[in-house]
Image (cartoon, rainbow over all chains, first blue to last red):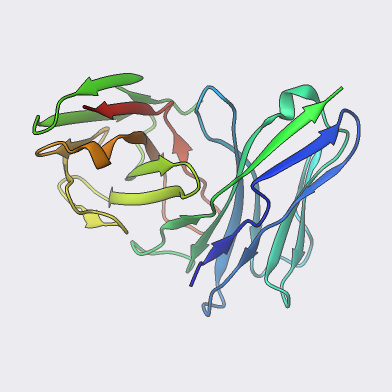
Amino acid sequence: AQKITQTQPGMFVQEKEAVTLDCTYDTSDPSYGLFWYKQPSSGEMIFLIYQGSYDQQNATEGRYSLNFQKARKSANLVISASQLGDSAMYFCAMREGLTGTASKLTFGTGTRLQVTL
Amino acid sequence: DVKVTQSSRYLVKRTGEKVFLECVQDMDHENMFWYRQDPGLGLRLIYFSYDVKMKEKGDIPEGYSVSREKKERFSLILESASTNQTSMYLCASSLLMLSKETQYFGPGTRLLVL
C-alpha cells in the first residue's frame, strides 16, 4: 500500500489565486512528521513546511499553510496568492517515528503546479 | 546556509561501466541519503548513512552500493551500470533523525546509461 498518496499529477492556478495540493498518508505509528518540498525545474528540492503528528495547530510558513486533518490522514498544502515562481513540482513526504536510525522519509509521486497569468 | 554539492549535474555512461556519484555536505551533518527520482514514481530511497562507515539499505538498494569514509562525503556506486539505472539521483543530508529535522538536498545528477 502507498504510504503517501498525491492524486493530482498536475494542477493549474491563476496568479494571485489560492491553490490546494492534496496529500494523504498511511501509517500505524502514532509519531510521525509530514513535510512538503518544492522542486523547480532546476532540480533542487526546497523544504517548505513541516507538521508533526502531535502538533495541535496547523503549520504555516508565509504563503504556505498545511491543512492537517489527522482523522482523515490528510496533509494538504495550501499556497495563497500564487506567484509565477510557484510553478514547480511539489512533493509530500512522511517520516515515521520521532528519532532513531529508522526514521527515513517516504515521498509521494508529486504534483506539478503551473501558475498562469 | 547548508550546502550539499554533487560532483556532476549530468553524466553519460555506457552499460557495464562502474559509476561513482559523489556527494559532499559542509554542515557536519550525521545523516546522508541517496535517492533516485523517476517520473510518476517520486523519490525512492536507495541507501542512507547515519555515521561514518555506517550504511543501511533503503527501499531500492539492488544494483547499488555506497561508501562513507568521511563524515562530509557519501558516495553512490553503480558497480555495473545498466540502462534501467538511467535516472535523476539526489543526495540529501540532515543533522539528526529528529521528527522535525528536514533533509537538505543537492542539485541532483542526471545519469544517462547507454
